[in-house]
Image (cartoon, one colour):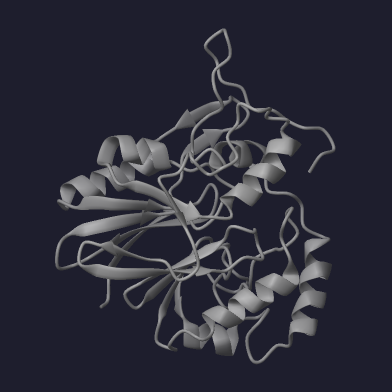
Length: 287
């Protein structure tokens, strides 16, 4: 079955979010939502999520799932806000616990921060299946960018998060804590076993040189043949050498510090302190 896919692109963080719809029942899932954040002012805003809410309501959709492909390091998730407004269950990969343990220590969260993934409604494992209305969906564990990365295969479409970008831009970085270029390569090879005609929806786009428009949809066949980092039969050794060299030159994402603290909590802010205000920590020389 081919799902309906409606993209929402946030140019501030170069993030593609998707509403994935079962055309037979008008049930849907929301993949990788964005909560807007003004870092300098310490203020959040919901205009990106509100666009999704307006679309869902105007088209009469029922939200079954609010899905995260991983704990994003470059934008905040709007999952709890969307759940409050639209319903649905929040899902992520079971290795969220690895991420919570790692960054719970980095941000010195203390024992009150639960590291068991209980902030999420569903922790998915490799080969798990679920339904969006009458449409079948399944889960592929595709770590490497982070330990908890998942790909959601919904009908004949795959939502790969940051594992792959558009073929002319390449593949994700693998230098975050728990990341691995070797593991990323093997995850991509797993994706390459999907049927060639599988639609691939990527989580970010940055306009590769020579391309004027943002893009987020390709196919497995195009990725296998044309991906500039891993296509055309690139070997694991060559990919790992390229990835490690390239990652050593990349700066950390602008929103990594607030994003990790919020997203490992399923999009919730840290508990407010005794003055009623929530605070985000900035660890010095820890990332």
